Image 1 (cartoon, rainbow, N blue to C red):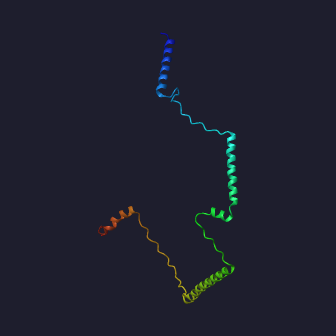
Image 2 (image 1 turned 90 degrees about the vertical axis):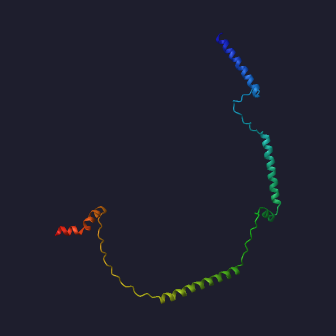
Image 3 (image 1 turned 135 degrees about the vertical axis):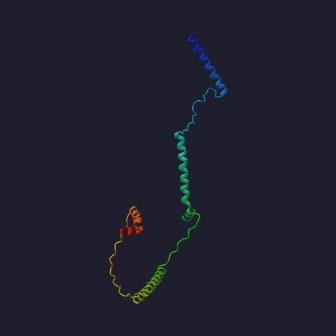
Amino acid sequence: MSIDTLIAEIDAEIARFQQARTLLGGSQGRTTTTAAKKPAQRKLSAAARERIAAAQRKRWVAAKKAAKNIPVKAAKEATAPAEKVAKRRKLSAKTRKSIADAQRKRWAKVKAEKAAKKVPATKAAKKAPAKKVTAKPKKAAPKKAPAAKAKKAAPEKATPDSSEAAAS
């Protein structure tokens, strides 16, 4: 057998296997090894986009007309939140003046009471002149020996008998 005949047989075998695979896989000629493609995005024609834009403009015009036809009071009620906020009432100038005068009177009374309490307290509590204290010089504390030297020195001081015996 020549090489050319072997290659032809192999190619024929490969073709049969591919045909069997497509029949078994049900892919009808498509291979499953390729990545699945995303569906192509729909493209609108320029005319379709223009029709959509025109319809939206028509809706905006209708909404603006409806807003103009609503009375101002009704429009405010429609846009107001669910909770009603209580309106602040205005005070007349006369009422504001009387409240301010009454408040000034109260503060004047409080200040007068504080002043009355301070005056007798300062007069009654005169202090006697302070005595002069002479500063005494501090005595220097004796220096302590380091711990290692203190331990060596301790046995010598602890045995006074031995030092007396040596002196005699």
